Image (tube, rainbow, N blue to C red):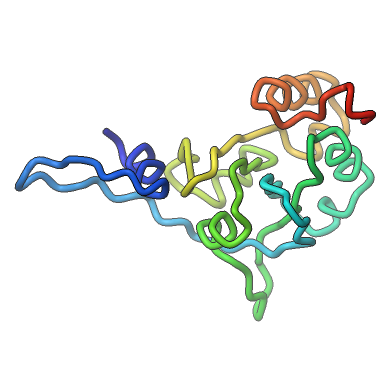
Length: 160
């Protein structure tokens, strides 16, 4: 079993049997921290974008309205003195079950060895970047399909 699956089980409090003498694989360390735009009460969705302006854009607001519950938006802490939460802390403190990272480049910046399947109790999903979503219909279709398949999209009978 790889480190990502072990992390998921570990965060759920499920003990995994490891033979004596066998070493448990270690997770790839996360290098950066997140700054949060807002903490939506009851939201279990965290959206990570490249910059604060993207989290506060009209596109982000429209994506949030298409979700079953308003997400928390965040971006990477890159400035000196920015005191953000590590991705693990953000997932734990906000009780996140879905982590959406907008863009492959951003994902690589956060996870050197590629995104894990799970981070703590949260499933990790890499979706098209905000720039791609603003310019490309196919990127929008990819995001919408993932949101529907993963139960992130609002149901049509909810009036959204």
